[in-house]
Image (cartoon, helix red, strand yellow):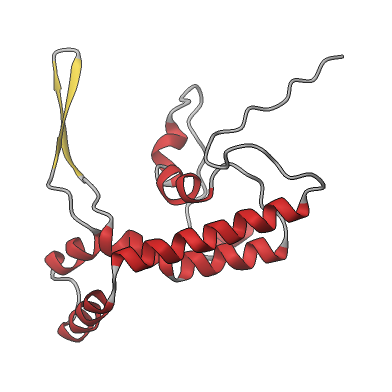
Length: 161
């Protein structure tokens, strides 16, 4: 990994010592983009991988970028011992991109056509169907069907000696 990062001129960093919150800033989308849709189960087979990749390349990508608004932090101020955060109005990544003016007119029209062709309710149904299929594949690979909620964080079994 280090050689790849060096070849691509990427900075290879680590968390700072004694700063347990560093990864919360680095990996802040892990909950909303990974754990919330997929849960805490362990997906290991090629079938599961193919279904997860299909979900992220198609429906989930479109749903998150076109229909899920996100609040963006504008600034933080220290007032006494507290930090006051100021957020801007919640917008979708699609709306932010259009407002930025960083894309060409051709790309803008292409995105607008794509947006007008999408149905958020249908996308959500397709996402739910794929997640249901993924969970069924997970259950089939186990010898006995599991009786846990896939969206609940699993607690490890304690080992005693």
